[in-house]
Amino acid sequence: MNKNAVVVFSGGQDSTTCLFWALERFEKVIAVTFDYGQRHKLEIDCAREIAKDLGVEHHVLDISLLNQLAPNSLTRSDIPVEAAKDGELPNSFVEGRNLLFFSFAAVLAKVKGCDHLVVGVSQTDFSGYPDCRDNFIKSLNLTINLAMDHQFEIHTPLMWIDKADTWQLADEMGRLDYVREKTLTCYNGVKGDGCGTCPSCILRKKGLETYLARKAEQQ
Ligand code: ZN
Image (cartoon, rainbow, N blue to C red; front, side):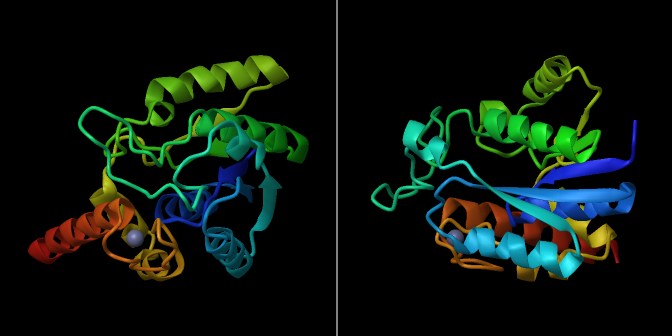
């Protein structure tokens, strides 16, 4: 296997942490961002800015088809983002999103001569999205290998860690402030610490506070 990787990169906290993780491990790193008509184009601007800043080759691929198939609160301004009700997926869930994203990323990886894929999914605190689970990733890894008759390896550095641990990982790489200031995870399109009230901001803030408290305790 070569030492080249494609990172699926949204410009958010998780995928930016994964991008740094990949830059520490691989010789060539390419970032790929999917434009599926996100409500906030700012997300894609953030991704472009970070990739440029880090000198990483960056591809933004149009996958607006996804919004035609499955309109949801991340793409449609007339559908408000709501927290999940008991036992249900939140309405920000996009059916099949990671299946499509990671398959397209694998095609790009093959074309660009990269044997590795890095994706920022986590089974730990992500509302039970089926396409964030480890068994899905293992299954997809087998499928893309068979589909393209090639040996890919999909890496999921965040699979078994929570938001606090993700902040810790960024901190261990000396990138906590960078990730905190330059990324966008907020559903209302506010960069950095965000709007503070949407489900995504609440999760991110809680993780950061947990991590910073843990760090202070250890010092
Ligand atoms: Zn927010």
